Length: 284
Image (cartoon, rainbow, N blue to C red; front, side):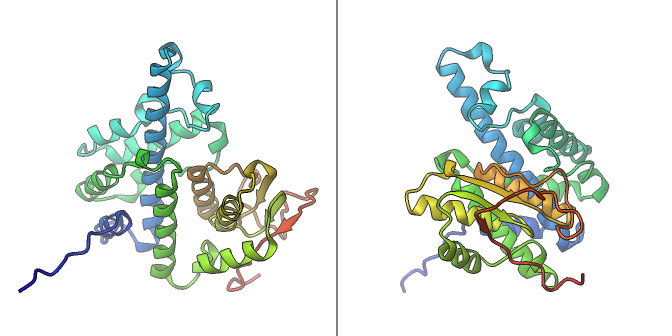
């Protein structure tokens, strides 16, 4: 009898199973905030390590702790206590949730472009099961983002999780996630090759991600595009900033999460393209 071939699980599927192990410790609606922030920290660390090794190889080791030499290459500078290897070393400690909170705070403090993007004092307040959190850290640690020069692996994982969270949460999913097929259709219709793109209800930033993919697919220049957005829900605002940071997309999303209709943070903007999927399922 021929042996049945076992399909290897994708990184996305493995991570999703690990996230599901949080069940009982965390509400399903909280998964995305718990998991995606950790994925972001792993991504940031891999890029930081890559840049640090480059500086050493170039004989610039004296600049290895200078944030300027990282920011110039679109890489986030990380203090020792905000680096992924430090979290892995302490993954089984009783205070790992506090250490994760401190790591996120330090990353934001060291990188002004991330202001308002990362959760603050979040993990310690969740009463997470320490062993389940350690297991999740171990799974995320297996992702090698450096094997993907375009960094699309992390973007792909992020997109997969957003879609799974939307399905799991059901009602209200339109608040932060628009199906990829719809976003792709909008980008193909308006053909945003150059100019200013604006999404007044940007959710987790999917419209911007797909616009950049459209430009790359048609051999355009991403520098010809400026991105502006606004999001009402604070947690979704943070998801969008992380999502765009992983993709290396610079975006002006205003100073804070705010309702576009009652607190427009881009009043003087004259946009060339407006892409939006307003949350029609929400009451005014």
